[in-house]
Length: 271
Image 1 (cartoon, rainbow, N blue to C red):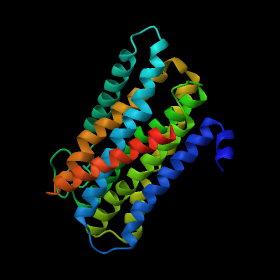
Image 2 (cartoon, rainbow, N blue to C red):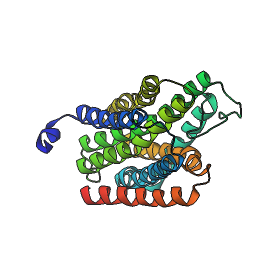
Image 3 (cartoon, rainbow, N blue to C red):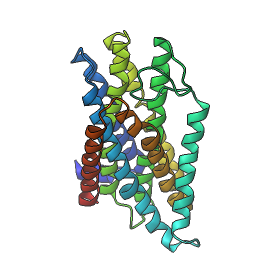
C-alpha cells in the first residue's frame, strides 16, 4: 500500500489525503445517529484537541519547511514565511468579515451578534466549518506539491502526517455541526448530511494547492506559510474560544496540549 501511494502523482496523493479528511468529517457527523444527548464536555475536549493538532501541523508541516526552502532564495529566509503567514491570516480575516457565519459551538448568536432562526443557523454553521476546511485542504495540497517539487525539507511522510493530523481534528468538526443541528430539531439524516458536507471543500482546495506550487515553484515558501497563517487564525479566532466558552477551560486546554503533542510526534517521527 505504501509503495503504491508513493507511485501516485501529487494530485492523486492530495486527493486521497483529503478524501480521508472528508471521511473523518463524515464519521464525526455520523455520531448524530448514535446518541440522543449533546455532551458539551466531549465536544469542548474534541475542539481543544483539534486546536492543538492544527497548531503543531502549522509549524512542523508548513512553517518549518517554508523557512528551509527560503534559505537559498534572494530574500532573507524569514521574509517569505512572515509575508505568507500574515497574508494567510488577513485572507481568513477578510472572508470572516465578508461572509456571515455562526461560530462553532455557539449556542445563541452568529458572528454579527444576531439570534438566527434554526434554518439560518444551519446555513451559518455549515459556512463556518467549511471556511475552516479551505485552509486545511490547501495546506495538504501545498504539502504534497512541495514533495513533488523536490525540496529536501519536504517529505512524503510529513505530508501524510499532516493529512492524518487534519483528519483527526476533522472528526470533532463534523460533530460540531451535526449535533447542534440535531439539538435544534433537524432530523438525524439532514444533520449528518450538513455535517459531512462541510468537508467536501477540502479535496477542491487541495487540488488548487498542488497545482499552484507545482506550476509556480518560487511561491512555495509563501504558499506553505500562507496555509499556516490561515490555520493559526482559525485556531485563535474560532477553535480555542469555541472550546472554552461553555466553562470547560481546563479540559479544553489540556486536550489542546494532548493534540499538539500527538501531532508533533506524528510529524517528527514520520518526517
